[in-house]
Length: 151
Image (cartoon, rainbow, N blue to C red):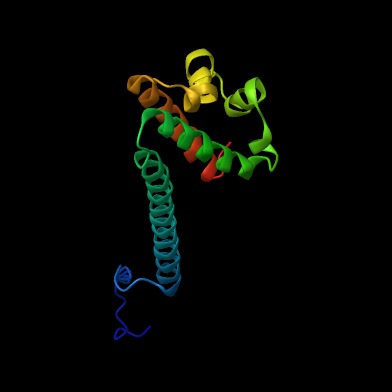
């Protein structure tokens, strides 16, 4: 036997460094960054569209000289938006129109007081501004839902 041969213990190699990552991790990071940027762009676009829709609604209602004209403007805006759901919606009248406005809601928002104001308010001589403000809030929500394509 050869005495010159000296055996030593096995030393494990050092773990690979965590930086720089493997190419697969770079691809995953790029994919995640792209997805986040696309989501951000979509949300910004949606928010900008929402602001434009609400500015249109508010601008037309604010341009009304009286409360009765504001009710007429609200009615016209709702009818235009209603055509996006059903092309014949602008020809509905009375209770059928109010039922169409409340379609898909758990609780009706255009019943009794609001509904009567929406149907007759444009022709009344005196209209309560507080009732118009209440109608405006409900109509603004429905207008936004329809213009955004939600039910």
